[in-house]
Length: 273
Image 1: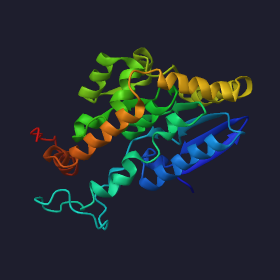
Image 2 (image 1 turned 90 degrees about the vertical axis):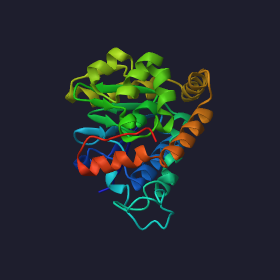
Image 3 (image 1 turned 120 degrees about the horizontal axis):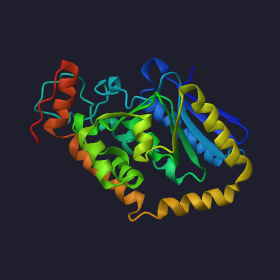
C-alpha cells in the first residue's frame, strides 16, 4: 500500500500520510510522493482545497531516523575523524530532501489545511506549520525537536513559528523543545481550533467543503498570496538561510553527539562545537 494516499471529493483533495505503524515518519520516497500529491492537487481545477492528515494515531512523527546512516550513498563522510558508527551518508545523502518541495505548500494556489490527529514532531511539526490553517484533535502532540538533535529551526520553522504565534512564544517552543498538546496549541494560537479525536476529520472536511463550495478559487489564490507576502521578510530568503545553517550544523560535533546519544539511549552531552 502506498505511503501517501490521495482522494478527491466535493472539491477537497485529501492527502493522507500512510505509515501508521511508524506514526507516519517521513522517508525520502514518502516526501517525494507527498510533494507530488500537493502539486497534483494544485494543478487540478477540480481540487479547490487541500487537506493533509495522517493515518492511525499520528500526524507525522517527523523524519524517520532509520533512514539516516543507511550507507551505500557514495557520498563523502561528513565526519572523517569519527569511527563509522552508523553509515557515512548522515548529511550529504539527505541533501536533496532538505529543500525539495517544501515551498510548494505555500506557493500552491490552493488553501492547505492540516488535520493534526496525533503526534506532529520535527519535520511533521514543520509540515503543519507550512499549512495555511491548522485544526488539531485533543490527542495531538506537538514538538519542535530541533534543539535536542543539534540542528537549528529547520525548513524555515523558526520563521514560520514566529509569524504564527509571536517571538516569545516561538522561542519558548524552540529553546525547550518541549511537548505540548492540542489544547495548548489552541491557546498559543498555533491551531485554529481543537476537537475530540473522532470529530476532527468530519469537521475539517465539512470546513474544507464549505470553502470549496462557496469561495472563488481565483479569490482564494489571490488572498493566499496576499497573506503570505504580507510578512516582513520574504519566505525564500528565510528558507535559504535556514538551509545554509542546517548544512553547517551537520558538520558539528553536537550534531554527531545527538545521534550517538540516541543510539546509545542516553542523555546527550553537547559541547557547543
